[in-house]
Image (cartoon, rainbow, N blue to C red; front, top):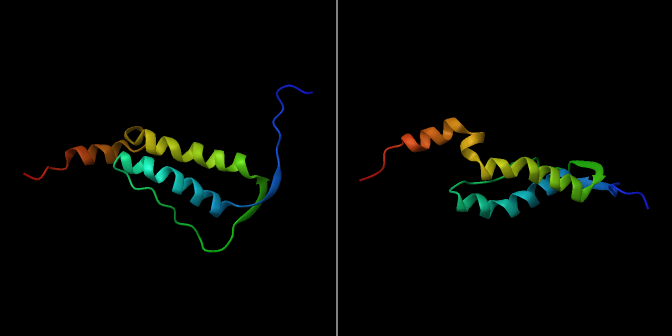
Length: 88
């Protein structure tokens, strides 16, 4: 066999559905960090041909750092949150 080859299984994929799946999976992680994760997509299918698992992983790789490192991804928002006066 050939070493190091990645198998791609192309099929029609609804990217909107993949975004929603990642949102559903990562929303609890975001909530534990005090963040709200939601997706806003069109109601129509957004089909493309690709490997469903690989495409989902790409979306997850884009979303995860936003949740895990919000102070780096959104430093101005983190600053504002810290500057907000606390209720007595």
